[in-house]
Structures are given as C-alpha cells and as structure tokens.
Image (spheres, rainbow, N blue to C red):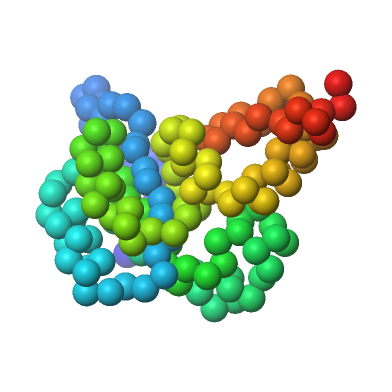
Length: 159
C-alpha cells in the first residue's frame, strides 16, 4: 500500500482513447438455497465467458425479519442475492435463462433489463399496486423514471 496523490495516479494514465463501449448489462435474482444443482449451473455460467462479474450476497438474517409489506422490497425469504454483469445483452440473457429456475424475485437496484415481465419479478401484485398508488400521488408526471418506470395507478391519479 502506498499513500500518493491523485496527480501521481493520473500521471500513469494512458493517453490512448478509451476502448470500453456500451452500458454494463446486469441481471438480478434472489435464491433460496445454494444447492448442488444451482452450483453446477452457476459454474457453467461462469465458464461461458458471457458474464464478467458474478456475485452472491447473503440476504437472510435480519432481512427476513422485516414484514414483506413494510417496504418496496418484498422478497424477504430468499437467503441470497445473485447479480451477474456482462457486456452483451443477448449472451447475458442466454446464460441468465439457465439460472431462472433457481430464482424467486429480484433486487431492482442491480437489474438493467427493462422487459415488462421483470416488473412482476421485482414486485408481487399487492406491492406493485401499492407502489403505483404512491406513484400516482407523488410522481404523476414520471420524473423518477429510471430502471422500472412504474405507471401510476389510474384510479389513484389526482388529475
């Protein structure tokens, strides 16, 4: 470890043009148990080269102590959060499809897919209805529209 200045770090930077392109593609899912079957599929996904980042986080314990209706994050029973990232949406989706049988819900902050069916995976019907009612009250014009831009509940809309 060394203590250095930002200027010294930047002096080592290349003058070449950046070679990265596009946004990262990420998929998120929640896993109840890490079974041998899950591990075998996860190993194939890792070996595929389609994902550059594979993360499992423990989310059990205190997370499970919160009532699923208490917040916008209803998935309180899975024990693990799985996130993968890659650069090619088709390649990532092809590998992700092999993991979906093991998943129960997703954590929105780690998901870049905008497919409509992902909304039902993020929120069960009751939670989604509650969030849409809140959206109609506090953001009817859709100012907050990143990731899963929820449409307000029409019956709750103040306009």
